[in-house]
Length: 358
Image (cartoon, rainbow, N blue to C red; front, side, top):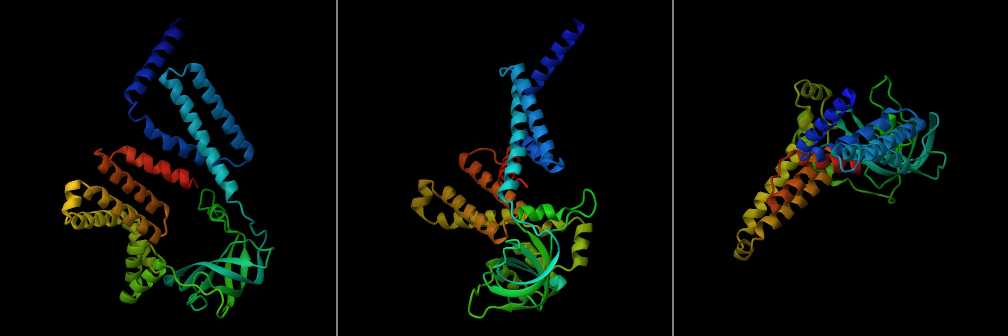
């Protein structure tokens, strides 16, 4: 009897606490989704994944047995279901992006189409993403590093011929270290390597042009020399390839390295300036001002400006997260709701996890 009474008091205490926190329970959705994704990465084999899914199903069943009308039962069911959804999401994503991976190192000559070019002036190198053709024995997508002279002037869309040393994407060198092979899998990179010798470019065929981001970075480097130009290009376009390693390490030690990543500060400045300018210009129209259209139209202009800047900066996760947050703030302003809350953080995290769970 004493044990039953203690269990009853504990259950009532949990119900009371959950009822008091009911407005914040939704904030745990991205946490549980991320926990499921992290568990998939942490567990080593498919059998472990299936075992965890069965364990989560058992927890959900336990919650149902506790009763859906009880808040603790609902939380147990929903939390288990969302964690299982996170695991299934990343598992499905891994299967969706599956691509052939090179089995062993090889030195070979092949033709390919250039998919993307990333200059690394600070290292005197150029990083190329290539799609080999006419070589079914090679992965459909490889990443090569060439020196600055070899890769000078190469643009996306060009057809090239080259000789390279290819190897499978390397795994983490130390337990718990950065696992490039994992990143390469989700980027569909089947091999990495180094260009050997000259890169031959097909004359008059498959010629491409540099992306807007590359042209903007090049313009900045023409105006500002050295590592200072690299920092300026990183702050404007997110291109960090020209920053001197010593300067990058100094910023990391000083706690300022996050400024080099296009994220909240940059996106907020673009969205805020675009909205302010649009409101000033649209306010010149008496019809728009009296009709109450200035704020919605200015918010739309700001959203378009933020989206364009996100694409220009490469749509990396920090940039995307900041853009989503900016969109949610704009929507909240239009609805007359409080914009800066933890729900904003939770919604941004949930969208990013759903779009790129890796």
